[in-house]
Length: 212
Image (cartoon, rainbow, N blue to C red):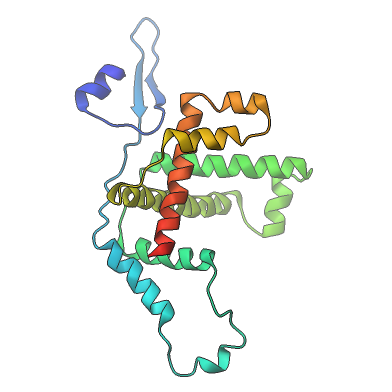
């Protein structure tokens, strides 16, 4: 596997999914290996897109005065981000690998099952309550997963373009703030530090978007 990956110059961002295609006795077993690579992300004039959203939100139009008393004077950060993400997703096309979407669906389904188990609710009862089939639920998770992944890739590329970085000191400060000593030690692995760095970089990128 490793030799093939290097030879083909693939850059997988997931663990390989192995599918056996032939397991005949007294013969070499044959497998297919499925991977997901980082998709191409062309940001284009993303700064103009973001600024256009902010200008649109700030423009006054006749007839809005009557509603001013009913609407908040300032949009919340969450509302601003949703508007920015929506505009970026409309203009930036990203072909997210199907494997990543499947993993998002499985993760969402696993998390839902854990929540239902704590509430002592079966999946069938939950599906009846929301009036959906299992296939419809998975489709909903797929749509949400696709959107989430697209936003994450866009944020990653914006962080690169703006040269936003996370220092080792910032990661150390997050770990030091964890009250439980065992949890602190568990977060000192390279994998956990990388996850913390990723979260911090996302926060920095979102904060940068809001300051434009």
